Length: 138
Image 1 (cartoon, rainbow, N blue to C red):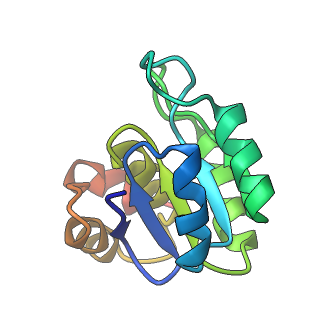
Image 2: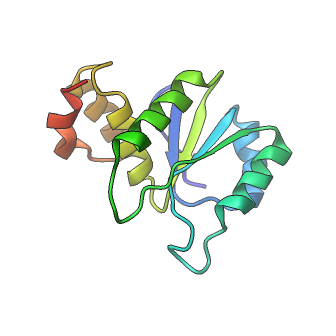
Image 3: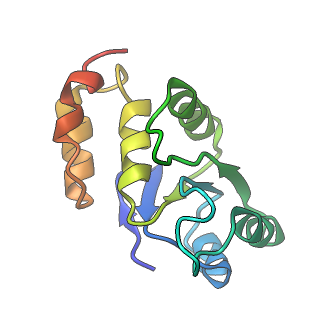
């Protein structure tokens, strides 16, 4: 697993497998957000498979898929609610981590200056500078 820490509360990663969930739990995460739609790749575990592994490990699981249709206000709001409602660090994943970082960044709009959000993402290896205009709004 290639876990990239955005801040104390959120980390992102490329695709995980069910056997990775125990390590996610051992690292102190309390919830997993899956931002990858089912069926993008034939070798990708389904959301239901990861959800079962998460529940077996005692982790909360949330499926907020971001596909070809793009980001919606509902996805951003769901992400925000999960992050704000979490009692500890949240692990987010998609194919590469970019979509997870995008939803995290947009969920932070209005809570922190755009420059801080972009900087936190960049420190984790993700360029969110193209979202600057959106991140300046609530």
